[in-house]
Image (tube, rainbow, N blue to C red; front, side, top):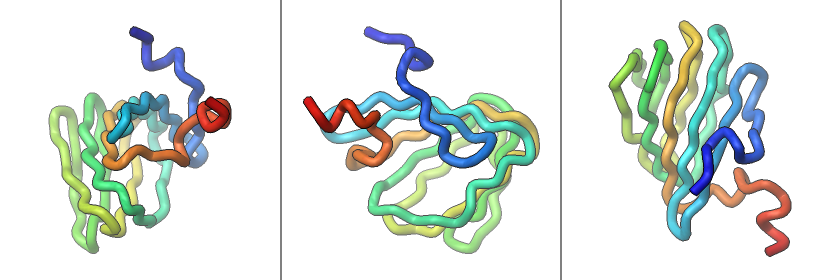
Length: 111
């Protein structure tokens, strides 16, 4: 058992840092987002669930606007375009299926 913040942090974009744990079929992420940070529109093969622990995260998912606040979640289907901007400092959980190989630390690929 490990503390999630003991994992190697991944800076997704300026102001957004993720800490990730990987199972055989999914990736779990604890995300810290500074107010004003912007995640540009993107998409990926992974189905994603974003859950807000604290703060307000405005997202555009499939062309629709959503304001997510503490306790709210959204399921983002595979290949669905989405973006986000933090209205306040946020803490969130992201879960991906299948595993986000691109989020694994480099040394994970060597084992």
